Length: 66
Image (cartoon, rainbow, N blue to C red; front, side):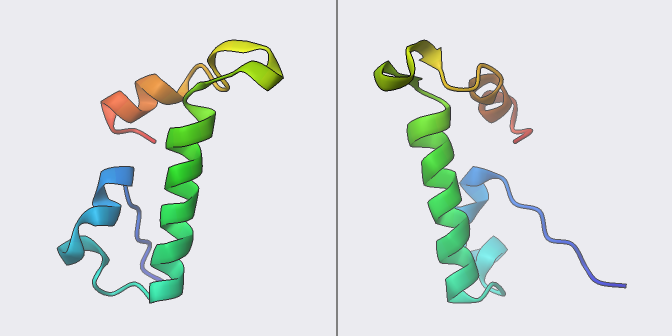
């Protein structure tokens, strides 16, 4: 059975947690994390959103469940 590795966004900066990841995989995960933090969790004027693009993301980030 294949082992599943799940990471919280904060885990991506923890060398102990990510040491076994290929550099390309870590770069891809960091790109997704950046998109979540800098786009999905924030207001976006062009989309007409005064709150986060997805209203569930900020709370999920706070709870450590995303």
